[in-house]
Image 1 (cartoon, helix red, strand yellow):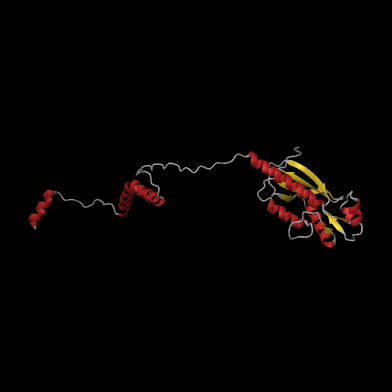
Image 2 (cartoon, rainbow, N blue to C red; image 1 turned 135 degrees about the vertical axis):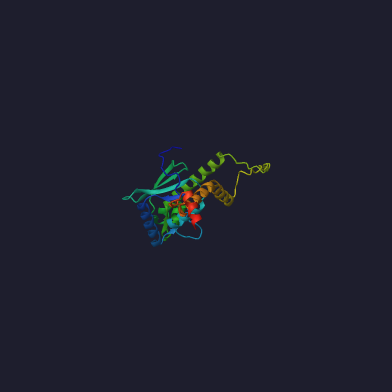
Length: 239
């Protein structure tokens, strides 16, 4: 196995068209196949379909390779020659193989599409007036899908089997809850408010005293003049 390059993305989705040019070329090939009256035989066309359309094949391969971590990448190879490249890439992003193919089908007589060395077969099919077709794209995609399948089977055989134990773990003894540890968040908040109220209580009492002292008027000393005691006694006698 020759590693040609290392792609930056390691997962593309099993079957991925990497360029818009390749998508356009494949759509043109599908339109050409739909417009042709050729009979496609000896082609692995998905069940329920008669023509080798890329739109059908891509959906079928995507479903078949859903669990496969390896990928098949489709890109444009040559615009002028109408060639696309098909790469098989492993799960680490390394290219395993690369093919170039024309997505447009070949059409012609039976002997032109399916040449054989049997003289009898060539003579027999020379009288056949039907137009036959062959899609090289389907042959290359079958080869690429076979490679990623084999690679996936190899990867599964190399990975060790995971043995799941059915034994139950011994029950752990429950730790004694300490009164200092509070797990309920409501109780934590309640205790926090209590602690705040307890620590601020002396300051609140002091604040009340300060407020009361500000509100009450201070007692002022009386400025009355006092008479001498002797004079006061004489005045009382006179009265």
